[in-house]
Length: 103
Picture 1 (cartoon, one colour):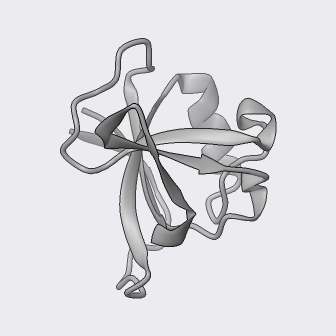
Picture 2 (cartoon, one colour):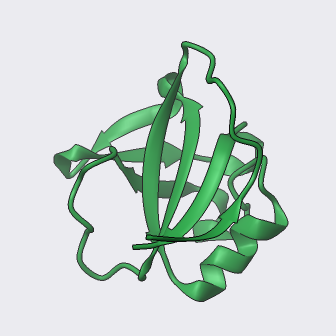
């Protein structure tokens, strides 16, 4: 695993949960430019798909894994038991502990 980018990593509030998103190099640049919230440019800010830690990489996604923590109340089920979605506008979603890796 190669860490490409990492923002502040610290203890999480009890209401936060870690999630992962698989992305292209172009999307990675969007995350690096705004490490405290989900970039509004993703899907027009309306919905972002993520997985729970340990879930297999979904098909059709990019090679980079974006790891971050978000309030668990923002997550809704999506597709399989290990997938979640965050409905927008997501630009105001406060995220913590952003890490971008290339597994």
